[in-house]
Length: 110
Length: 115
Image 1 (cartoon, each protein chain N blue to C red):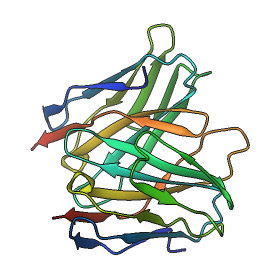
Image 2 (tube, chains in turn purple, green):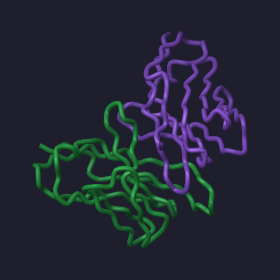
Image 3 (cartoon, one colour):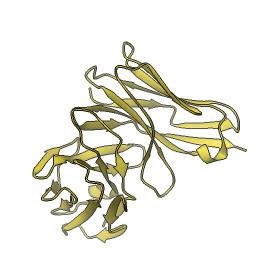
Image 4 (tube, helix red, strand yellow):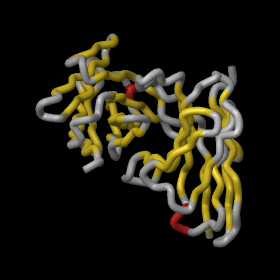
């Protein structure tokens, strides 16, 4: 149905390593896939987004890939830093409605 | 620009009480929305608006009312609070849609406890 499955729920990496978070969805009409970062006590903030007519998008250390056939999209963070520690949410958008994943708590160990 | 502002930051209610969570944005955004965030469940859309005078339901609208009389303001009303409505509430806004999704800007949230 409408849910977005997000994995893993927690992820610990050593500083400098890469982190990958994956989301799957089932509604093929979804056409917008944003990723948000939420720091403790704050509202979520967009870090990168991708539309359904694009397969990959990169912004410095952050990249998102979209596989429409398999209905999954992933967030890739390279050269992780302690300030990347936060909760990350994926979401899918369709006709003004957004469905969020359940979040991944990323811990970058110094 | 102040961005998206929410008041109050914290609120404690007794079961059956009513209250309004305020949300305002000064970016002239057409789209505004309300979410609730519960542990392990991410953010769930309560109601949204695509412009003044236009509102619609999200995933979890029961127990909540909204109105959009101006572009700037989008209040969320709890008519008779229940313990199940204990949550953190976020308001968000987004630029003109023109048929395309755009970045949502979130407020700092309101932490609501219903006893």
